[in-house]
Amino acid sequence: MKKNKFLVPGCIILSIVIFITIIYSVVNSTITANADLNQKTKSLDQQITTKQEEAKVIERQNNENEMKLKSIKQMYQTTNGTASNMSVFGPMFNDIIKAAQTNKLMIRSIEYQMQPVGDAILNINSTSYNACELNLFLVGTYPQLRNFLNQIVNDYNYLISISNLEVTAFSGDTNYILANTSIVLYSKLKQ
Image (cartoon, rainbow, N blue to C red; front, side):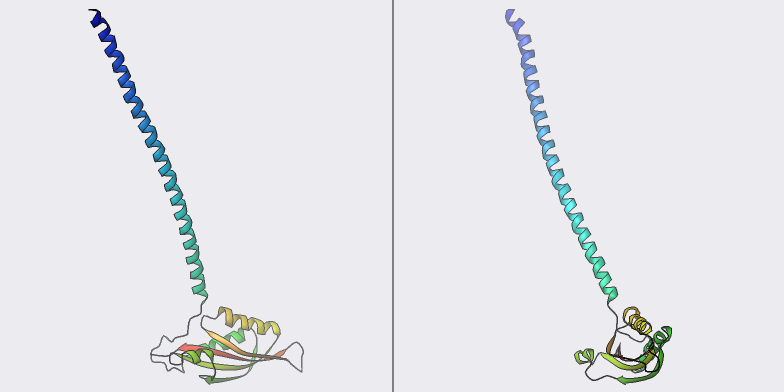
């Protein structure tokens, strides 16, 4: 009987010790797993932050590239497939004349030369491009000439180059100047 008296409480104590050991190992492995999970979460958060920063840099570079592309001027090309390579300059002549008139410059004379000798773009690829050099003799004020040049260089949609600009004072009125400028217009050749 005495054996039974100690047997039941001993079994209960042994069961409690085993239960506590099992609970301790489960809690300990849960804490370890939680610590691993927290560490992996921090690592993933750092990777996400890095990827987001890289995406922002790429987006910024794409925006800069789009702005650069927008600032590159296109070569004029006629929408009318039957127009001759020389007649495509008609609308461009008109744009230049309108720009001079808008800026209140007086046009004293206009001369043109197709395929000007020594032009840098034509020297590179004369089989794909057409060029026409306009020699304009203008009368106006310095601000009018400056505004005209700014308009055709910055606001004009197509590639042009100003190859020569000579400015002299008007002998009759010192407020006015005489400007002789060469503007080269470019277009793609009809293929």
